[in-house]
Image 1 (tube, one colour):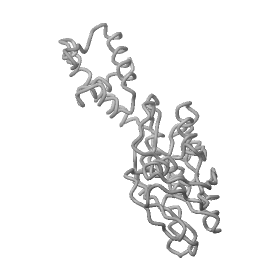
Image 2 (cartoon, rainbow, N blue to C red; image 1 turned 180 degrees about the vertical axis):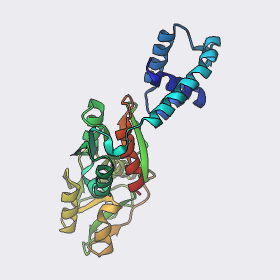
Image 3 (cartoon, rainbow, N blue to C red; image 1 turned 180 degrees about the horizontal axis):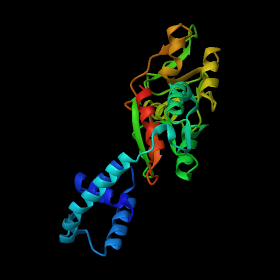
Image 4 (cartoon, one colour; image 1 turned 120 degrees about the vertical axis):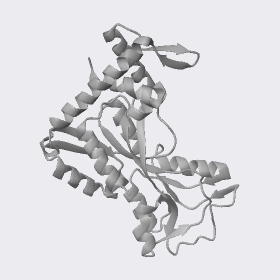
Length: 295
């Protein structure tokens, strides 16, 4: 019997539903249903029965509950006694991360992780957010650190860590008399640097343009945030970027912030996992360090 089935069984009762248990455990609801079906098959009894839209414990399920708690509590105690120290952990962990987030305390995260788990082989993949999502879905990486909004993907568990303010910028001194981004129903001819099509903040800004009926007549698509930043600094165009990426240029007067209305959308930096992937101690350690360092 897989001990996780009993943990899932208890979590359903603690949260009150299969869907809330799935959310808490980081699984899809179908994965939770499958685990309960497997547990019922192994025990040769039904644990839940449906009344209307609600699931209730069967009489046998009520008898299993206290025994399941004893087993899981005992398992956790044994795990605590015999747990491997972090410095003795071995294995492999593959992280996919957006290029621009490489400057967001990622060096400190890697250093702390390697100090605490020196025997774990850590691989870091620099990818656009859309490729990070695909790498998670295909199993090519274990954890993704990426930008995201409130848009959801049923196959992924995404945990926001910090809100990322965005800013519209140009090189200081660039003539702004011929355009602005507040008035609706206009065509802007100034060069605008944009990210790859699936980039989160490109999507957010595109929705802003659509809502205001603003058309960009000269766009330059670049896959690298660093290339966009250099293009703006050289005075070749303007762009919409995370504030932390251009904070030094704004503070030093190299860039100027352009006015625009609130998009009404929040962009976050967070981590993502495939919902059906089991989180072991190595992943838990990396996630804990990441949450403590991205602030």
